Length: 104
Image 1 (tube, rainbow, N blue to C red):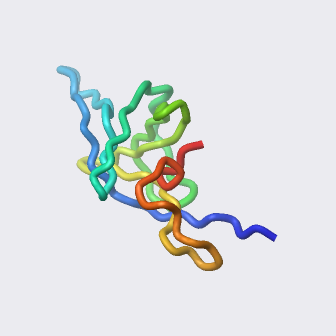
Image 2: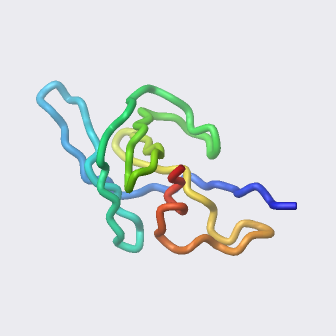
């Protein structure tokens, strides 16, 4: 029987732009090993809680590499719900890959 993956709240660097009205948009998610994931499109923006890890913020549903995922803006920081490294019963995911980022 497969063990369900566990997730952790992981703060990440995000390159973003802010317009004159104060609206912020993510452009690139930068992983802690330096890998960069370009945001192809922002699909939805809304206040939401992070169901897998706790916490809340402005949730951006984004398209990265042909897949959809979420990045949260918890002013002034950004976080993702990432697969936990070395979760019980599971090998750690490949460091910095798109599955670690939680992409669907």
